[in-house]
Image (tube, rainbow, N blue to C red; front, side, top):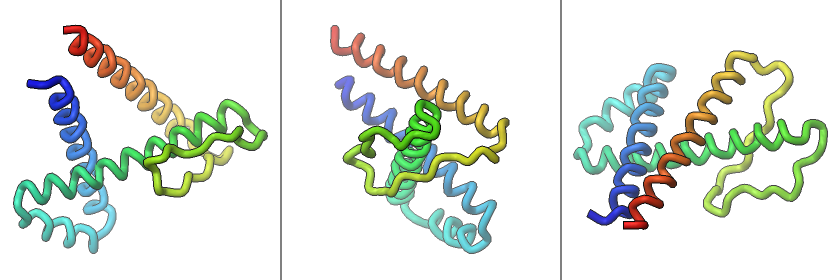
Length: 134
């Protein structure tokens, strides 16, 4: 099996998981979305997987933009962002930086998650490098 296919499969699996989780959270928070998501469960498995993968990709993009905004704000508080532009694949407007009223526990959780994502990304790159050396 081609390493690129494995990476694509893992990335799609991750996005499906994120999309399914986002749908579950929407269902818990909004009764109207709950009905919509329950109706979606009647879809074919491949259609449902595709829908969750798209939702996961969008959620991933939004999270990346949010974290990038937080990091930019942390690097230069009070200064306007340097000519940082959002990634070309992003069609979403950048989210606003957090205010000083942000809950410290939420901020710490976000930092922990960001560190975990960075560690996973590094591990993934190392695995890609090992596969390409073979």
